[in-house]
Image 1 (cartoon, rainbow, N blue to C red):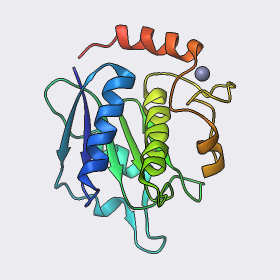
Image 2 (tube, rainbow, N blue to C red):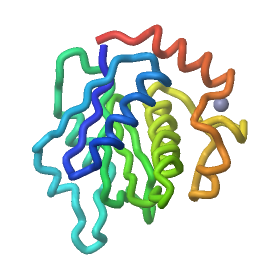
Image 3 (cartoon, protein in one colour):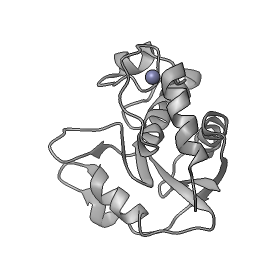
Amino acid sequence: MYIYIVSFENTEKRLLFAVAKNVKETFDLDVRVSWVAGSFKYAYDSQRKQYMAEKVVEYLSTLNYPGLVRMLAILSSDLYAKDLEFVFGFGVKRDAVVSTFRLWATEERLFFERVFKVVNLTLGKTFGLDYCKDHKCVMNPHFSLTDIDAKTKNFCDYCKTKLKTALSQLTL
Ligand SMILES: [Zn+2]
């Protein structure tokens, strides 16, 4: 079973591979990285200069790869969702998208760390995890970079147990 990480923009390869390593370590599932040439244009709002998260995820849900259990798209463009000015990440059932647009930091380690946190929370949600009150837990809700920087990229014991159960019940 695999988590597929896809990009359809010129997202930095080093970042994609770093995300892949983080996902493998965090979710204990094998990861495959690929570039999809699919047209996401219909998900792009040229007035807002943002992609609409619901439409990106809808497109992802039409893609199928062998052994796929989750699909995660990494975008360097900004992302919004219905009624929200912007979102860092968005996930529905099997598919998720994360934007690196608002996570940028001149220090690469910090930038990557922020991306890992948003990825882990967004994928965590696709595995049925909820927001968590533990301030260090990655499932603690974040609304700003300050929130993101204040927590760790790891799950608290409670969320870890919940995730383990969800992972053990995964089927193709
Ligand atoms: Zn937690």
